[in-house]
Image (tube, rainbow, N blue to C red; front, side, top):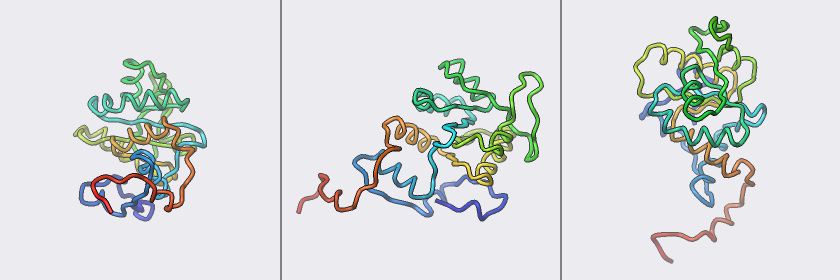
Length: 202
């Protein structure tokens, strides 16, 4: 966890030096339950208000890796939005009916795509229609992906929208939702004493 809300204008993505800062550890019956509890302990909010998720994934490699997770989210009934390239990829290959949104070119961009008439991702974020943003820009050197990605990530922080910038974490969140772990009830630590342990004995 890292408080980007206090760092005005900072890009809310972490390199390896800071990714382990402010760690949160939680117990769970399995890795997915422990992961989700730890994530929620940081103040992360699940996409419950509008049940809407914006996907902006820069490279085909990451899109392929996220494909099963995208199918899970669609089957769960979430409304999926995607920046143009991301939406086109998942719609063509997986028929997910992701609603395309135009990538913002600057922080004040309110434009609508002249060719398709689709709305601007920044406008949808500012209007409160998006509950969760998955923005994966790692591995790309394209300037438009880097700049528009920064604008989307910064808007997520400034407008209090949950943001995931790591592909592994994004997949885990989708899998947790698919297992219904968003409805779990917190347990007393004493309940975990009864769990079997591996590798040591009394």
